[in-house]
Length: 149
Image (spheres, rainbow, N blue to C red):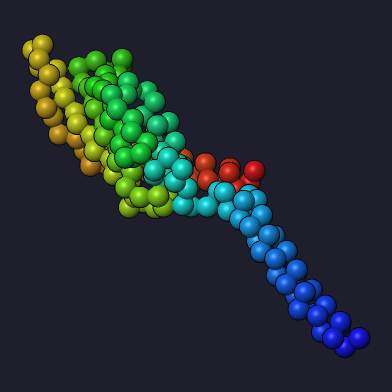
């Protein structure tokens, strides 16, 4: 009887071990909602919250390029109908899979119409900073919404 009992114990431990491995494998596929909304979301090559927020922030302008794998968005020239003598073009680069301020780079070009031709003009640093702030705020909001479900 002792030989039979000593055989049962290792078998029971082995079965429990296999079952726990199976459960661990299941839990990695069924992640809690908060994990899905983690700051690092990169199913498209870059942080998806930054990507979506960037697209939304420049949705008023026509897109020339939107490369989600490389994280680059380039708009075509856009002139505000209320100020047709000025136009802007933007390039947004998402540099990381993390939702961080330094993972975002915004560049803008500005031109003014002088005597029928477009001439390069300076872009105020505050304008670029404002667009970065809009994107980061929207990305954080998207993340909060994903966490809340």
